[in-house]
Amino acid sequence: MDANARTWFLVGGTLIALAAGTGIGQYLRVRRDATLNPALIDGFNRRIRAWWLMSSVLAAALLLGRLGATIVFGLISFWALREFVTLTPTRRGDHRALFWVFFVFTPLQYLLVGMGAAQYGLYTILIPVYAFLFVPARIAVAGDFKRFLERAAKIQAGLMICVYCLSHAPALMYLKIEGYEDPVDRARLLFFFVLITQLGDVMQYVWQRLAGRTIIAPAVSPNRTWESFLGSVGSCTLLGAALSWATPFEIWAAAVLSAIIASMGFAGGMTMSAIKRDRGVADTGVLVTGHSGVLDRIDSICFAAPIFFHLTRYFYAEW
Image (cartoon, rainbow, N blue to C red; front, side, top):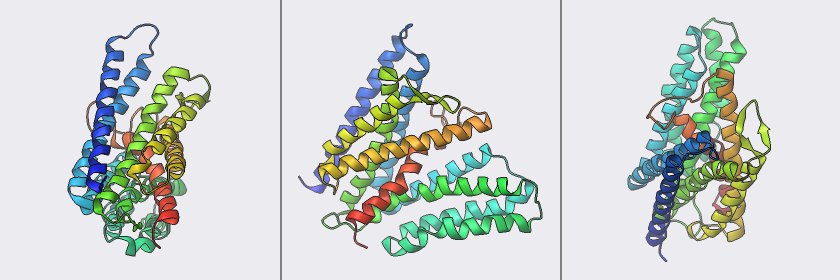
């Protein structure tokens, strides 16, 4: 099977799975009774809609090539960062630092990613080194010292989660992997990563409904249990192994990497839940009715992307 056939087979299978998930979600919504938890059904349907939305974004990005994908993810980062900053109010003394964060460091990070593997050494340190030193210094120069550490840390956290971490998703399309040089192959690797991440998100809700008993952190997220976590990781592990033909990985490696993606996605969801609880909000935004905020939909991708990227690069890509 050539690269194009594999890609279309993967995309077609995803569309069929989405259609099936949509049908199941609508059936459960109409069938509401005392044995079904309405919140879980709504959550499941939101995840399916998010999956449709992310698949549409990915399809548009893939049609535009890896540069187009980089630009699309850059725009998503920009909007997610906007939601994060709105969620964590700032003071007048932070505005100049935020200007640099939004209009210098964010586009520069994606510009370096778009320049390819040659800039790996720079785009992996631009934010955690240069931006992280610049932000508190710029706030200090503004002369406002009230809650200084708290304000600087909020901006740094938003920049790290929404920009630095997410930028590793399109960076997958620039990895040099032996026998995997075709741009279609690299696009399929990005699609595989997003597919496993979104599936992990959906399966958490499914397993929560089927076997959820032991809540991990009731004060942070009453809907996340050890059973849903283990069920999600197990489901993604099996699917990842089954989809190894779509990746440059062996079956066991695809399974292990899928388990890591699901675990990191879970960590991202828990982290964003803690932040939202602290701020007293249910969602990070209302970009599209029924879809919550952009950050709500990509929190799992943000946490999983850098780990998946670096493991793939370390074990499979040319240095």
